[in-house]
Length: 256
Image (cartoon, rainbow, N blue to C red; front, top):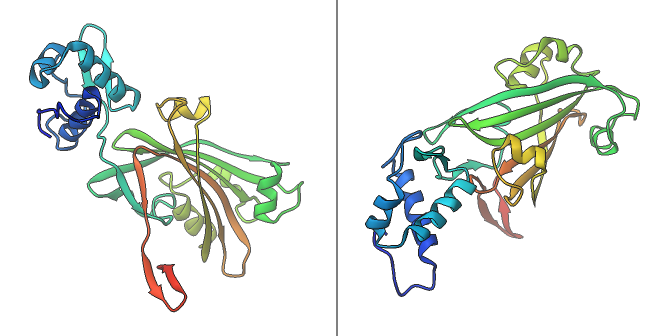
């Protein structure tokens, strides 16, 4: 689109400008923390009123792509390029923290032992209601931008003193393998779309109107024993999951 608007398009001018600014940021015309041109400069570039520019900037700020500072202007706070990832656990397990030129970090927010988890936890882990579990909350950051919150529960009988030992580099799979020689054999996933709670919106630096992709998973060991039950909430406007299908006699099936 460059800096030319389609005046005959039914798409509002502010939205065309929003998309164009996203593309310019994606192409690194401005880097993270760079200041955008002023409203007057953008108004001149796109040949629209400053009111229209303010609308476009407000949408970018709502999505967390820019941040306005009073008296200083608008600054780039995140790359709007979607993060495309295979539908697997290579990020959550900590096996791949660099992908597509992005850098991913996992920050441990909580790690504690408790009893009497809510019903869905002991049901999915197939443990009794009075069995202690280890609870882990992590925040995933993509190029310093919060992108996901992961809540994990593990049977304490399989991971003794994990709450005292901590995670190695924030990576759960690496920790389980190193401390307990535990490696999951298979994983069952469920995908849902939902709105964030106020606490989730705060952690992810987004609004309650945003959409999250919930990846709910249960990992199992070779003998069928559940190892981890997790809920990972991904920012829907940043994350894209990819999976491939292949043709079989019974139709298309997801590749293993």
